[in-house]
Length: 157
Image (tube, rainbow, N blue to C red):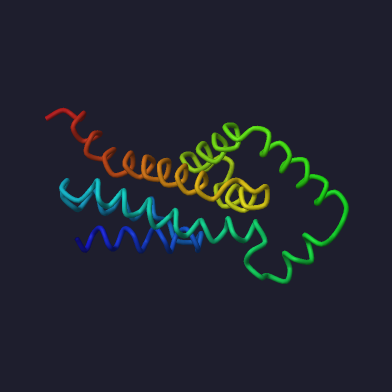
């Protein structure tokens, strides 16, 4: 239970503060802990990450009141034209947009924090963002927590 709560908190903190790395925590916890809590830890970290990334989504959407971002968004020029083009593309291709969120969430290529902000800016539906992020982050963390044991099982003797 403590491992699960810790995984949630580290996941949430790492979603908000990029200097904290939930992946390193999960691999370390999986290496020293038992198999019993691995699924719960991966799920808890996925939930924490998803909740934390919602803040970046709302940042991109303009809901959070940050003066620098409002000044940037209020300008006309290349930034607003670029954003308008991407918003139109996102509205016209919801599956492609969800796919980009999924690929970035699972692989971190392109960096997921950037995609979270862009998802809010181009108005990806929040439910789509949350479901895709939760599924792919949890899958990523499941792979991480079960990989050390699987690799150890492949070693001889």
